[in-house]
Image (cartoon, helix red, strand yellow):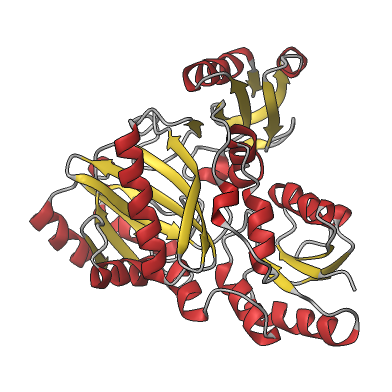
Amino acid sequence: MTKTLLVISGGAEAVPGIKRAKAMGYYVVVSDYNPQAPGFAFADDHLIASTYDAEETIAVASEYHQNIRPIGGVICMAADVPLTVAKVAHSLGLPSLSIETATLASDKLAMKQCFVEQGIAIPWFSQVMSAQHLREIVADRGRSLIIKPVDSRGSRGVLQLSGVQDLHWAFQHAKSQSPSKRVMVEQFEAGPQVSTESIMVNGEAVTPGFIDRNYQYLEKFSPFIIENGGHQPSTLNPAQCQQVTALAEQAARAMGINNGIAKGDMVLTAVGPKVIEIAARLSGGWMSSDQIPTATGVDIVGAAIKLALGEAVDVNDYQPTQHKGMAIRYFFPEPGVLKSIKNIEQVESLDWVYRLGFFASPGDKVGAVTDHTQRAGYVITLADDCAQAVARAQQVVDTLVFELD
């Protein structure tokens, strides 16, 4: 019987991964709470369950596994739910991260404590128990700090304290975005930030994903921290890239990610690279599904699918074979009600526009940008080198006109 892969997440960004699994010859079942999830249209079957509710997903997956078709592997794509994946896989006796490792990946405070114990270089950090505790930390260390929820995603609740006057509000805002109502701070580290993505096989690693992150709007959106995409190949020199890569892979092993994908958020400081956090999953933002394979020639999603199904993977087969220029930039119109987006056809006709998408449609209310969910859309561009890809992305940003009331 054809092996069955359960994909926990059926959002738009999961669609390329679902298609890839189908192209590899697997039977694909997708679970999502949304009956209209885009991924359902490309799956062989689907289950209704919240990706964030492990017990609900275990219940529907177990019923399917026992009574309809045996599941051979579990994975998430462009969804930050490694703990749900691990718990479902554990309940069905399938290959996966340990629940302990998945828990570390879902809890930034526990992750940082693990890194301290394992000697991994990270920014200074502390849990924050109250607004008064935050005031005491600021009095001691100054305002060059980042406050964030311990267990949220999409930059929700993340603030630069250098741009905040009301520390009580900052604490309450971060706390409101935490499911467990826990808050932490960490030192803001100046330097280039990088997204890495590594394939881990029995502790060995290869890191085909290495993308410079763009934070050109830190001041504009302060105190909120909003990323404006990324670009590759990296502008760091080979020695710096090797330093960052080695630390990201070391951090993944420290967490127990020995078989699977490790996505790193890294910063190269004046004293060397440091780990901001490591995610135990395929990245979103079209990074693993489109940007990495198109720019490097590495099928990282295919590797992740094989690992989820317990199949053999050789890291030597996933070395980059090319280094094309690629950039992604997001659209940030002013707040208001969106009337129209002009010049779309002009942009779509450009052969170097790889992908163009919008999160807002005419009639939608566009709010102030406080986290990554408020971005209005994106463009991904291709070129021979990084500089040209970035210039082309900016050309698209400058060409599109968002008309608002």
